[in-house]
Figure 1 (cartoon, rainbow, N blue to C red):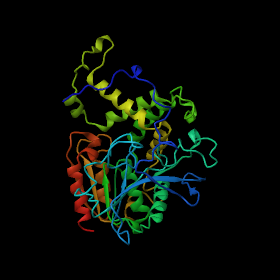
Figure 2: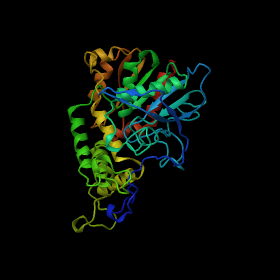
Figure 3: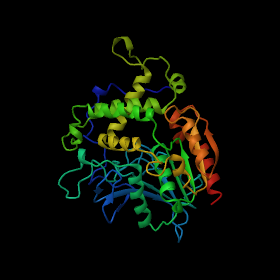
Figure 4: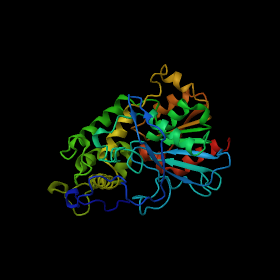
Length: 386
């Protein structure tokens, strides 16, 4: 069950300063939409030259009534399904859910997946050029919230001729944006699936995020976020952030079952070697440095911290009552980062939700990504009523 994972990080060659998609890289399956006007930001000011990368599967109906919006989590992107290849460093992150004959059957549904504003796989973010093209945004990229990100996605929907999504679905950070879609634009959200998410970031979630942000900003190569053209990025800090985050994404029981106290191969933990679980974390830290951008990690983490559906709306309860879509809310029984109580609050207050659905999984928070059969059943239940 246990596989050989990563060698020591200091034995690996340095990756580029950023794992972001940059101009001149292969486009892969991406398409782009550039907003026709500056985007007003909730924190003040506006962001000009916003461009969203997105991918689509299937064909839109003449009235686009079969359009489904899929929203990714923190380190996801628009590549929901399909192989790795030029322009796409990893295979699709929800392979079991999207495609012919699957729950999101692309012979029937037109599936749209944008890369989030502030991300690093084709959409405008810290690694993107500023509107004048002189240099990238870096540490000057403005503070954005999930509402800003959804406002940009609304303009993408307008450009695609989609007046109303048949379904909006997302988990974790994607669930935050899915909820914002339903609260901000109830008339444009036909059905809603919220997975392993919350109405507002909790103090504990902000606390875990704070440690990750400090790890990145404490890296001497952070340079205030202006490292993209230096040749060396804050990979050590990003790696620490990813290690910590990944522990919160999985369950204690799974880690114990998979790794226990076993050493990694011939390494001896008493003599400079690692336990298997340490090698596992090293592996995920190294992978992320090769495909993600540390400044995007900071921007998106801060956006998640800012998530509060009830802000300036009379509180969470009043905000959730604005949602008119038939809704399913599901949590993962072993999730210690977004515990079931948070999904129970959503299910209790969303008018179109019947009850909390529970995804059974040993994998913790990541269960919403890994338990494709259970999630697919929820998708089919919602879409069957459309």
